[in-house]
Length: 253
Image (cartoon, rainbow, N blue to C red; front, side, top):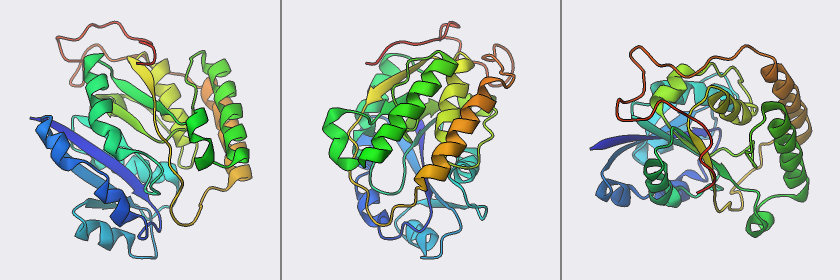
């Protein structure tokens, strides 16, 4: 049976955890051949997020150093699955779409899949200012890194664990989302971008739009001129032998 880790960073999301956990289709995933663990990263919450996540059946990883990227560093390092899927704890991402996304992931032999929220059908779920900022940052990202990712800020990805082990993602804050995409694509891993439904946020909004946007913009330029490494071809984490050694964009599927 294939193994899947669903990693969810959470800071004061006790209100959202019960409805969120109910959307994760564990039975459907099991029927499709996945043994699944849910890893919730408690990012120093004060509302009992970690305790509630554990009662709801998640494996809880504690990350006392706050920050979106810091939470992901802890959660991804702790994940045991051969494949990792991610999403926020605020009920905006469609975890119930995972079986279909995973089918496409394997059908096209991808190594990294990201998702696109910036669709006309999702306009009501995101503030106009956030939509504009996301399009702006995504445009800068595409220009600097010469890829065609439409939503550089999306927080839902699926990737093989060896991809994470090969990358050197440094961001401790919101820029983690764009950095992991650009790092994986620059390294040459096979990737694609899938459209997804994006849903209204539950509970308190924690995004600090202006400072986070400025920090993300700065990170894009810093990352662009950082030395990057290619895909490993030897060693413990090399690709499975049945996979072609070539890599690159396969197109939205």
